[in-house]
Length: 174
Image 1 (cartoon, rainbow, N blue to C red):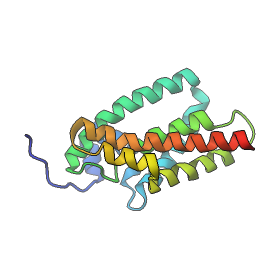
Image 2 (tube, rainbow, N blue to C red):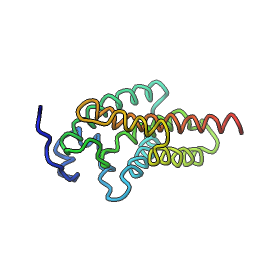
Image 3 (cartoon, rainbow, N blue to C red):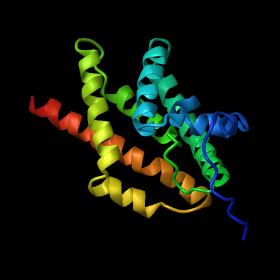
Image 4 (cartoon, rainbow, N blue to C red):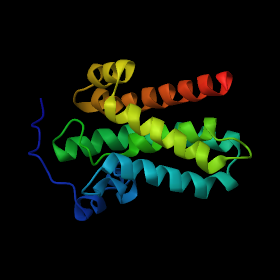
């Protein structure tokens, strides 16, 4: 069994020390001293807006799949280097989750900003409050190593699913 390193404080020098840290910290957004998950989700929104005009559905699907695999690796390694199973500074889970929501739920035309703002609020609620299945996923996959790295991502993927479910129900009812 390998020794667990002592807790390391997330910082810019720590992030710069390994490419996995850049990814896991959402290219620095996770270093926010306040609400890093919210800042990471805002970074996801901004990067989605920058990338979306250039990417079609197939490219988004590939980017999300590659980001999930790279994120699993980056979150696993960064959590191990920090000595913490699920540090708040790791926000790649928010990035992938919110990219998924925006890719699926953003209307092709019309009230794009307001739809995305509503999706942002819903996603942040589900991610922070962790009701029902989100809390279950958060508890179920906690741990060290690859399982823990997947656990960091899993609850946000479930939060994305719940966000999309509420949006779909609202659209069907409206």
